[in-house]
Image (tube, rainbow, N blue to C red):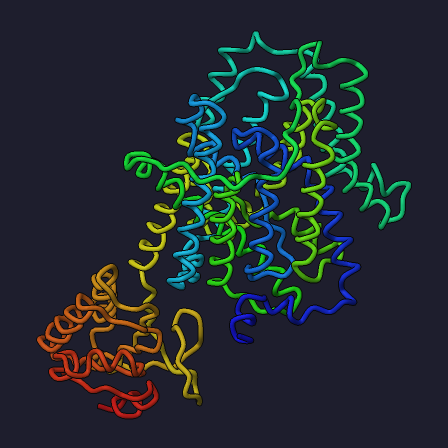
Length: 569
């Protein structure tokens, strides 16, 4: 029985220190209050009624707090999952709100199942295959689409589409439906939120202390929400044509069995669910790993997969759409003093209170404010700094960034991500197909060997030493062969050729056949092929092959041994 309880009750709860409770409560209250406007807005971004944003911040948050890997990561509705939900469910938008909501819960369940399966299969290592360029380009492109998509709430123009071209064409088509008062509200709200978010130095710090300025900046969106509600009531905005969110259903999200799709619907949703699961894992684990490192804690990628998976699976039964770890809400959670997942549980209590007590109070809130809130918060996700760094240091990663960014804008989220991944993998293959093969010499008086083009080294007329700085496989074996042959022509007097294998971690069948052929080719020219520094796992593969058994030269333990044996021959 104790062992069963130990497995059911998380370690953080068993080891909880009461002294951390006050800071956890404060952090939970702060996050809960501050993310209410965001949660409402992200539900709208996902194509759902605003109340679903609060639903998504209850059951999934409880499950992740209990099981997830991070002690401070704040899980909930975020911009990326919201717009990916809208993109995946775009064909179902005309089937009515109830059916659409069921499909959103189904998508959350599918995403959660994929994440959970990946965790059980211990596929946490997969995140390393998403390059920084691809993830930053995808998120930046999605941020631009999110920004443009919110113009329909700020202008009242019914913008629709799956990419930039669709949004712009529909904007042009329905431009006459622009509502001036809605535009005025949206523009003023957007300008105030941008000034608050990016001009805190002038808006707040010029007359408040740094600590008070920080809280003023955080509380301002909530204050603006209250002011907008008051003005909406006093100035009768709804009567004047300004769209408001209306009455929010009171009460907790109910247990609802997900919609049972037919086979064709599963096939339609599965690619989007897979890509969404990938993005949720990459973005959430990046946040969790970063804060674990800052706090000196361990990070378990497979446990993160399991926690995110079960959170989304549970949300699928309680009227939620897909959730992930949020960059901004996690930062607020940590900065406000959160020590354990108790802070997230307090945040859930705030959401429950909002649903039970404040539903009617939010009814006059203009959609224009929600749109402006998302537009102001999404600007920070456009990652120009990463593009600049990639352009300066790694043009291939910059190409991956731009391909994902442009692909998202033109073809939509799913196709854009696939394009970015394909360019990234193509770049990896291209780099691997051009291995660095250096002609080396001996540093005088030492046992070290370095590139002759970078160092002043000693060379030997009868001896040509080449260091292969890459594993040898089907994608680069011809390049390695060409470089070795080219070097032998460059140094025709060298009849002993030594391949330094210190950087070679694997040789596949194509690579092995190339080395066998190279040995015969050199022998026909009265040259001998030698190896030095072959790693044990590589030797295990080739020791009983013609590479070794028919080798014209010898295998040396070190390059120094090869030089001592061959330099005077």
